[in-house]
Image 1 (spheres, rainbow over the protein chains, first blue to last red):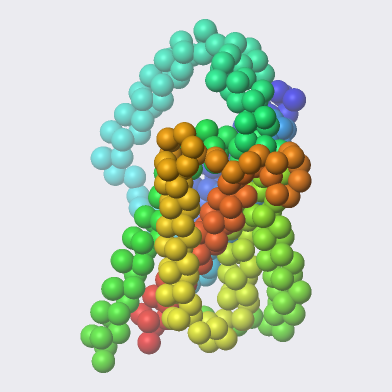
Image 2: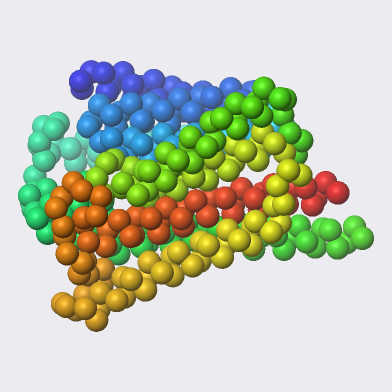
Length: 181
Length: 145
């Protein structure tokens, strides 16, 4: 299973690079969809149907919204030639990637092998969720009982996003209509 | 936004109701099956987004619907917060206290307050995503006119 995961992850990285560099924006969106649905396959392989369901639904809705935006704005990417300033950016990013890989390699030496975990808290959750909350779905028991404040924060993020979209778009749209009259 | 062809309209008519029912099922049975409020809410809003994309903007009166969805969004998260606060006054004193009886695990009425939270967060997510989509579409129409 590890080899399958590695293949899917490498394909996902390639698709992400293709999404950045594609000239046609629709092919970029398709490549981005490959990244999302590859993540769904990874979640299924790691036995996490809860996350896979949320990911597959959200991925579909966001793809529909992005496609609707692309059909209305422009299909081609506006390319800019590489200038002198970009050379500094590229070299800096290579240095940062090398530093990140070095410290990442140092950090994973002390970890357990793949598939074995050492979290004492999660063992307690798995043993006692059914008894304490009565919820057959362990994930929902953790989300809405032990970790209720985390879920509340998640809901707050969504609420803030909707409010900011309403504030920016509705007010400027109304102003635009008023000035035209 | 113009509507699409008759084939797309017919297929969307058949499919969006199924998506809506599956979203409600996923939100209500969230404490038994995989799914839950978040996935169910996204499915509910996805049914509406499909309908709007297929039928165009003029078929629905969208300006009244943004107000309705933003009211529903605020109401559902407010009720969830009030239920969470009510845990402070019932039994032991902490936030998100699950003070309802647990029931038999696996049946529909079990898990104390968890199904109620699931349904509320489902309504909230559906209303939020629909609000964002409606706001985007109405803005575009207003710019174009």
